[in-house]
Length: 148
Image 1 (cartoon, rainbow, N blue to C red):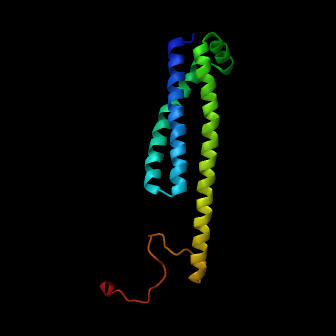
Image 2: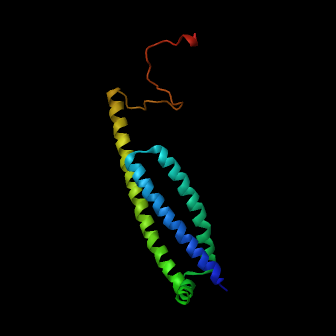
Image 3: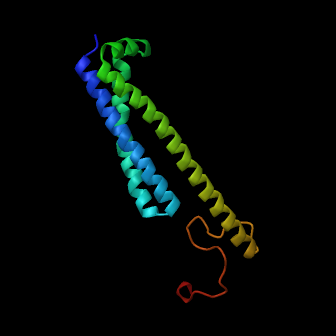
């Protein structure tokens, strides 16, 4: 038996969190375009937190009703039907926004890789400019007296 009040509450909460998540994706897009890494760090933290809150709600909702049962339940609860429709719509917007952000990240990554390639070619090297320890592997020609 479906707990009507609980399922309606889950839909409302999932919808509110999804609205917030879409807003975070828009903020992320703006930060990506601006190259604001500090802001991105905070946004990623908030996105992870929001996903951590949405996932258990979706799991509980899925446990409560099978796909075929939810249609019948929604037909009996018109207010929740509107929430469900908006949730489905928001899911599409979230997917599209996430795809956009992924494309921006991919473009930036390619640009960074191209810039690194140019630097490596200018240095006359085809290997990385930095070693695994994060230090330059290019010799400066100086002798470090502390090592003597």
